[in-house]
Image (cartoon, rainbow, N blue to C red):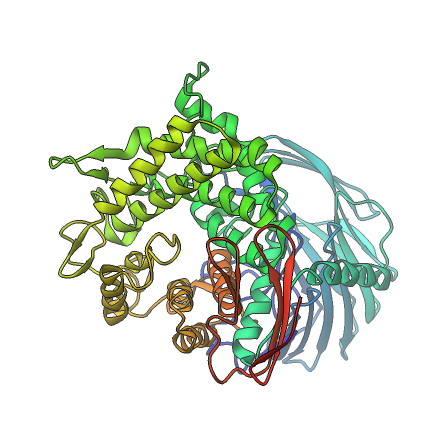
Length: 625
């Protein structure tokens, strides 16, 4: 789907540069087809080039900058009119920019999905006589750079490890390459040319050949899943969200974004669960499975953090950092978010859902159950307590950050632990492992369910709480541990809906409801069977999207466009309009489709492996396979 914006729409839709990438390279191109550095960025986002896993060995683990592209011509004016398009089916970005001197520069650019190459075709219509100068600002800290006149730059950067490799900048027209002012310049007299910026890739690269192979790679990925629905705004955002999740899927996992503004591409187990569910319900199994595979690769470090070098627990005990780099090191600044515990539940639940959707019993035994069991043992040993009345409760921790620190027995966290314990017990039973532990997990889950905080006829965010919270929906979504018609859950849901304008952002910012909270509510409404309400919410989200259908962490304040957590929840919400499953895996087709949707079709993932495809016409299934 090709999405186009222009200078007239930019301010009203909170313009941010178009995102390109492949899970290793992360590139943002602005409407000039370059990466002009703005004073305050676009919602904390700055155009530039980053690479997943390339970071410094500091406490914050900042991403290493791989520079940015600018251009200049003698006499070139300022931009006055522009149009930019992103095709989210193949990652091709086009731009057409007219400058005050009359020059028009057209660009077609893409980042190859399988090679670390940014390829750009540029056409310049101008009366200016001088050459076009493409300036590549590349001067990372703690680096040694060596370049020659061929356009090849050899780098050595002292970071989390010693990174060595090459960057090359070449054109298909006569050009001159030289170093200048903390960067490099490619000077090109021609008015039509292509250039390639390649990272650790010295194979030949021709624009049209690269474009063809890039499109084939995207088509292969897109064959795994599709939806066709009547709502154009929802489908637009859905397709962009799927696109951005794919280009954010690193060789390790999926961060909230491979950008400095997005916590420098660090990995949050809490957020990973939402992106995982968006992908796996879509049928993008390989991309989704990276997440639990990554967590399993770090399990020795996560266990050593608790058990030291002499583990005694037969199941294992593990805890992961709140924000981890690729080595399982905590990279978040110190704060009360260190006292979250529901990220441990999410590690367990991601692993469990990976088994449910794959049906791979051997994978459950070798990788997934070790994650589930060790995470649940940490929750059991460190965070399950008994209050003065002898009830099973979760001890003080940080729940959703808006509720503040040191909250006893919080509702959302408790629901997450119940879901994790029940998944662990079921997994152990399937494998015939640790029957004593399985029985204890079930007993604790039942005890926690019986002591969920409530008052005034509804569940409360925590005992005695007078605030309202999206976490009040947690029994339905994300965790599904309470029936949608549970009276206390029903009233908690209604309380949130009545007061969401007062609590609808992750932080104490703005007065509206952030996009991923709207999606959260939409999934819950879909699970309640109210497709009309769910679609209204999703169309409200779509109205808050950026110029290319990208989602923000908080659109109202323009904070963090291209935010994967919200994308994952949005995708899952749309998928659950079309397809849900009973606890035994029985499919429910169109369980929350609004009455006005008479023609729609989809191919989505199903538990046990494989995909289900359906085509509805005149509101009736014409094909199911």
